[in-house]
Image 1 (cartoon, helix red, strand yellow):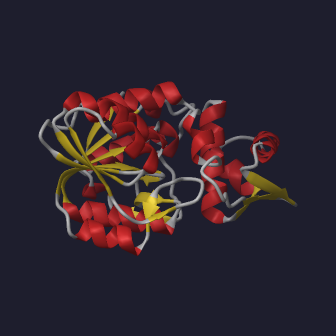
Image 2: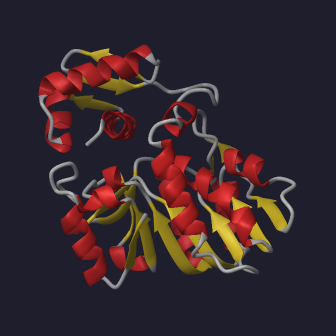
Amino acid sequence: MGVASRLDLTLRLVQGSDRVSVSELSQRLGVSEMTVRRDLDALERQGLVRRVHGGAVAVRAHDGAAGFSVREGWQAATKDRLGAAVAGLVEPGSRVLLDAGTTTVHVAEHLAARAPLTVAVLSLQAAVRLADRPGIELLVVGGLSRPGERSLVGPLALRTLETLAFDCFVMSIGGVHAEHGWSEFSLDDAAVKQAGLAQAGRVIAVADATKLGVRAFSQVAPLDAVHAFVTDTAATDPATHPGGPATLDALRDAGVETLLA
């Protein structure tokens, strides 16, 4: 696993648990405790975690500059490939629900080429990318903007989704596990994803290879709730992503179409 991938996953694990130990991160990531300590020090210098004895705790951002904007630059080329691959699966004329996340922002960039589309977004960043694009009818789902992420969550977002129907839901995900299915680090994000799953005729999940084999805090759905999954080719390499191959096999066994970008 590359440094950027490891930092991304480490940050998500700390944020999902509020407090996590060095030894637990070492086991989850398959790296030495010394490497974990260096990574936590790097994340602390960026103001994303706070080091405590034996581990780290999450730092709750109070503005949109932390969290999302830092992770957005990690693996940008990989996420852009994933975004292009996902957009290619969306049929022109569709009604699309686009999830929040650093990868789905890249999906938004490529969706303009699939116009005409009606796109409802759960991310303020995605809304900026799609605003005023020819052939894109943009709907910003209401809700609470989650600090540091600018994802739209909460009761208002859930009530809005319950009134709409979509041809396709493009879902980002924090973790996908052979036994525990799709999961997310935030309860609020998990609830919105569950609402999106219920309202969509087809679901395309997208995540980079670091999310395979990961069981995040809140389960979203079993594997077979998704129709197609797009990830990067690193997922097939057990040396860098030990949970990748087994998770891909489990997805295929569940009837999920898997695409590598």
